[in-house]
Structure formats: structure tokens, C-alpha cells
Length: 281
Ligand SMILES: [Mn+2]
Image 1: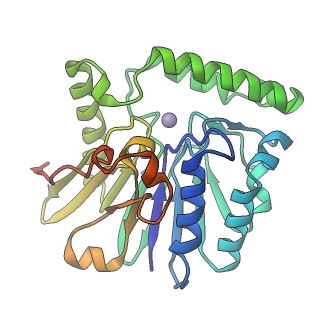
Image 2: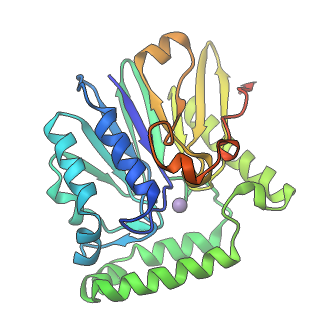
């Protein structure tokens, strides 16, 4: 049994080396399928994939093939929509047994309880973003997306992501220290609340923070882990029941182990997960 989690790859097109690395991990990760094998995509896998548009379906056909093959091999598939990839229920309906979640979801595996969310709703003080999210997910927007040609969406998406890249820092470390510390605290508290509700593991993404932390909740221990930003941190998450016995929880695995990406990103840039910290809640 293996549980793989990917998030925030922000794949830009089919030539993106991270896309190729992702597909290669998928094809090798489940070579010997076992019962309970699960794949969770926790949002923003694509830098833009909105609606059921041919331009995206064709561009990412290898992803669809790969997911269908995993489904046929009995892997449970989950896709949480992010703020860059949503209105995907119809587009993803060609993948048997894949469940699409618009916000968060939980599951039980190997006697443990897992909570997953993209993370874009964690910071309750981001009122502007919340309004925008409500607007982008509204029925009006859904209708608009369904009638606008995919090529237009593609162009608008490319322009707006260039713009937001020039304005917004990609990593939490690029924020002013005070803001970064606050954001990290907000995510950790959110996770701590879920752990107190009885979850053993809380997995989030979105803020691109390579953070993880263990909490003592009564006589239990629970882990919060953020997927980070794979394009820089180079990692996805893996959990196995073996990890539960060893009490190591999720581990970060490198995309670069068996891939040409290694040549593009020097090993020094692949930052490892920080040391584990303990805190009682
Ligand atoms: Mn996001």
C-alpha cells in the first residue's frame, strides 16, 4: 500500500520537464500494484486547466492516458481542484473511478485518518481572494467558461500568470519575514485544529511553503506537511504503512532521482525537508 501526494506543480505545457518527471514517477510508482494504493493530486497540478476544453485535453493527453492506466490497475484516484485548475469534473470524467473534490476531502487508510486540502481557503483573512474564488467558481463563471473558446482561456491564463508572476512572490520565503511567519502560523494552526478533530495526517499545498511539523495531541502524534513548490523543492510526498510503524509519517521523495531534470536543477537547489519539530496542542 502506497499513498502518493502531488501538488502545486504548475505545469505550463506538455514540454514542461516537471510534467515529464511527474509522468515518469506515476508510471514507476505503481509498478507492483497493491490493494490500498492511492494517488492524491492536491490542486494546481496545472498552471491552467479550466473547464472541459479540447486545448487542455489534447495538450495533456499523456496525463489522461497515465491516469486511466492507474485506474485500471486499481489505484484509487483523487483530484482536489486548485485555484489554477477547476471546473474539471467533466474533463476528468473519462478517468474511471477518479474522484474530483472542489475543496477538501478525507480518507482512512491503514487505520489512519488523512485530511487533504489545496490550502487556498486556509487563510481566512484573505477576503479579496475569497471573494474572487467565489466569483470564479460561480454558476455564471461556469457558464461563461463553457461558452468561451478554450484558446481564449488559454491565452488569458498565460497572460495572467505572467502578470501574477511579476507581482507576487512564488515562495513564502520571498515574502517579508513578518508576513511569511504569519502565513506559516496560519497554516500550522489550521492543521493543528484538524489534528485535534481526530486526523492523524494533514496535507496542504498552495502557499509553496516547504513546512512540516509534528504535534502531540493528547497521547497521539499527528503530522502536518505542506507539499511545497516542486519546481524548486523538487519533491512529492509518499506515505506507506511502514512509515506509520516507524513514526516517520510522510516522506519527501525527489522527482529528480531518475530524471533528466537533475541536469537542469543543481542538487544544491533541491532543498531537503526541514528538521522535525514537536509541539503540543
Ligand atoms: Mn494554489
